[in-house]
Amino acid sequence: MELHQLNISELQVLLRSREVTPVEAIQAIEGRITTTDTRVRGYLSRDTEKALREASTADVSKPLGGVPIAIKDVINVRGESCSAASKILKGYTAPYDATVIQRLRAAGAIPFGRLNMDEFAMGSSTENSAFQKTANPWDLNRIPGGSSGGSAAVVAADEAFGSLGSDTGGSIRQPAALCGCVGMKPSYGRVSRFGLIAFASSLDQIGPFTKNVRDSALLLNALCGKDPMDSTSLPLPAEDFSRELGRDIKGLRIGMPKEYFIDGIDPQVNAAVRAAIKQYESLGAEIVEVSLPHTDYAVAVYYIVATAEASANLARFDGVRYGHRTDNPQTLLDHYGKTRAEGFGEEVKRRIILGTYVLSSGYYDAYYLRAQKVRTLIQQDFEKAFQKVDAIICPTSPEVAFKIGERTNDPLKMYLADIFTIAANLAGICGISIPCGFAEKDGSRLPVGLQLLGKPLEESRVLQLAHAYEQSTPWHRERPRL
Ligand code: GLN
Image 1: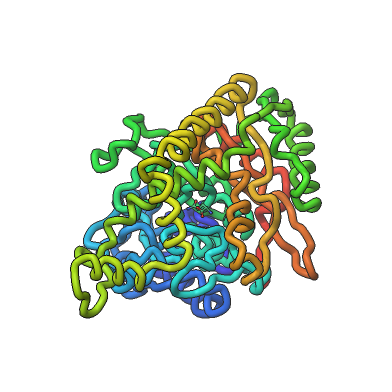
Image 2: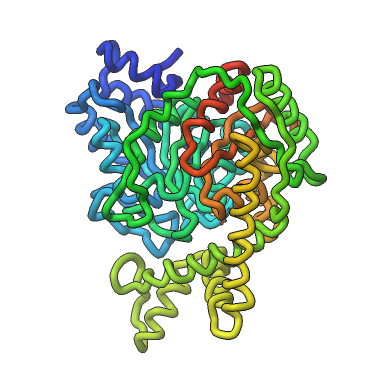
């Protein structure tokens, strides 16, 4: 096995025994990127010299000592570009480290590389990046999912041991599913968003992409904690999220929401997820049918709440403080209008317009306020279900990766890619996607993702369940041929 193929836990063993140095770990990743990323196109940029310098003084006795972690281009790393894959932030250099980056560094990890994404995290295929299209490592003609498509693709392609992404409506779990890796969205409030370019502040969470469940727990250990710079981060004691890994799942109850097993799911996805449910039964878990009756409204509610918040958050990109600025404006309004017209891509403009509309006087009550009420009903659906079960199981995505270009002219169809992931953000609960098999499409073998949703702040239970399945099945060991 080559160094770049290792997962984080395996790499740590070699780093700690000094068989491998942190510098060699960076060089291994750099070598892999050089051979495969011209095809995968997951990285937007990287500063290898800087990472090597940091590696030369890394302390391997720390929890993530000497482990390079790649970062979605929406999280600030001091001295590096941070574009959110938008022309409006082209050339912007982050003046500070996001809290998650400070935390990674405190744990000894080395942030290395900036990852492609949908512009401002709006999308499900990474095709909305202003700079490049990332390919799915399992079939280079297909999308990696989104918006954290780069984060998923580089981990699946062994171009990173692990990465960070952000999840507002599924942007960690859906690309993890489509690329065949593990993606975790922590509960709302678990992880500080200070230094994350905000999309929809009541929904955004940062989380890890990894090659297996144990690594996901290790990264989460480093990321969590109260941050005075993000008032939504919860004041909770530090936890070891790996503590339940390996513990018997006998007697745990897993809910199958009947609204999530519907027509329209790809039959091969449906079959893989149902086989996974059988596997849980054979591991001793009890499968219980549950109902989430307001599921039908989740996508509609999300596209009101998320666009409303985005229209407010993106108001700061005015060409005065940072990023792109138009040439020769005639008036101040002309300056704003032209800067934003030139800087933002089509999908981002669509969201700003939608969001401004639903917040406008006369429509606020009809759309925004009503959506917030339905959001509460969706939250209550989960509260009721979680009275009966420890976790909920369902597909992460109704389908496997589609072809690049197939959906670009149909935003509504694109929005439906997140039909199974969005409710978790609206409810603030945690969720993970893990590989659960493959589907054959036009001669390609494409990963299928299994989603486990957990009660707020019960990440360790979700990780325990995910790990039990993973360790009893072969899927996480499969790698694309590149
Ligand atoms: N695909 C969804 C959207 O476009 C979710 C994105 C995300 O989670 N950042 O809004």
